[in-house]
Image 1 (tube, rainbow, N blue to C red):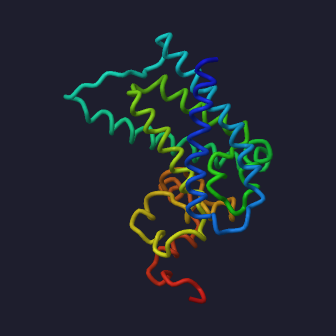
Image 2 (image 1 turned 90 degrees about the horizontal axis):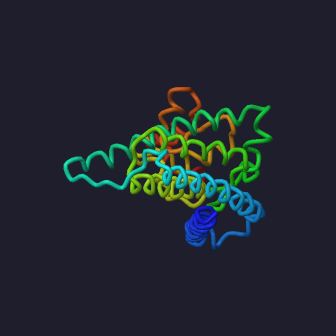
Length: 238
């Protein structure tokens, strides 16, 4: 219970701080979005589920049942960034598969509908998972610490990246600099422009960090690829 309440507070404060900062920075001049209270409500529920998963991870660690460790070896420093990237790639593949599965008509209502009530996403949407979806995503974190040797710093970096990336991806198209999707990173990593299309067209763009799986399985919207062309740098009517 100590772990549960501690991590609930940490995860919730991290979400409120990051989403609140991004909202203040980009959305303070816009009319109030009616979906924000609903998104915050779902996010609090998700926080409870992720806190429970983290508490379980720490309990398993105390019992020697995970592969988490705190050892630092100067000769093997490269293991930390390598394991960090490996977990991101694995998490991205897991998220793509489960996210696409949750869009199946028989599952969407139970696993993912709450997140898509925000057709115009805001930073507050970043953590607004349906409880069942949050549970499925939390299972990945439990599985990865059971199977892969990870330093605590690596796990913390993954969790921080997940939160920051989720907030950035839900900034929306309207608040972005004109050239953002046209940077070379736009071909490789998912950003606000890429994910905003998913909220408008549910059958496209299922990844979390990288665009790779959308390329491979044909779920990238051609409109996004066209937007990366130089001829698309001028907005219609500009």
